[in-house]
Length: 222
Ligand code: SF4
Ligand code: SF4
Image (cartoon, rainbow, N blue to C red; front, top):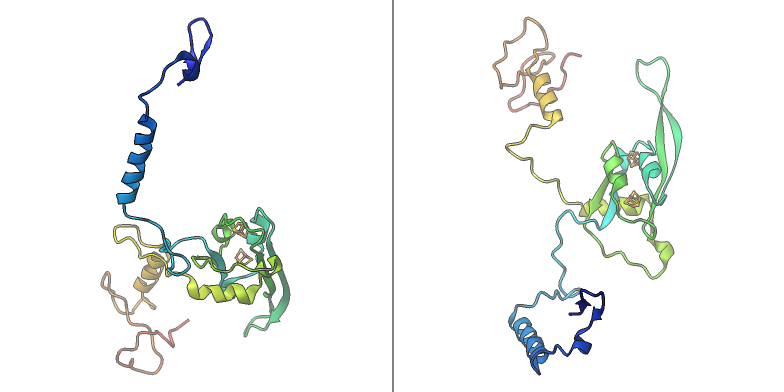
């Protein structure tokens, strides 16, 4: 390698006469070739053989439409502005309520995958678990316009979303589990059955005995 002398002059192997043994480079190259030839090939024969991707690969975004409340958080946070949402309001009559309630109805939910940079921010910010990663990646198109996936297309990807990983048995229980266990441990009436810790009390039933094996708790007092 070249360098600098104490006087600041630049030294170069080609000009200083430092040379290795003749043919040393060739031998070194052949050694690398031989070593590589004897190693097992890691080439995957895609598309004849499907690649083994990690289950949480970021392939395409799937939409669970019934969970979407049209809060617009995903569209606002998307750095590429490639989520397009339209909706309208509907009135829903609620029995016993003085006024009908309003709810958002999703008309359009499109993601333009020709702009998406797969950052995952939309999935992270969705407060209602309406967006998921699917590892499916084979959706290349000849026409770039076809990379705009509408809500029906995004919904079809839900079939390819892997189930969530199992809960760590040594981890803290989920907030929902703790709340459900606390709720189940509270007796419905003060004089009611004493509860044993860890045993779920029988739910109230109107008009008599519970059917064997029935744990749904229908007809409980409200
Ligand atoms: S992954 Fe990122 S870029 Fe793609 S739609 Fe979501 S927020 Fe936008
Ligand atoms: S953040 Fe979630 S709930 Fe809100 S509009 Fe987006 S997908 Fe729908």
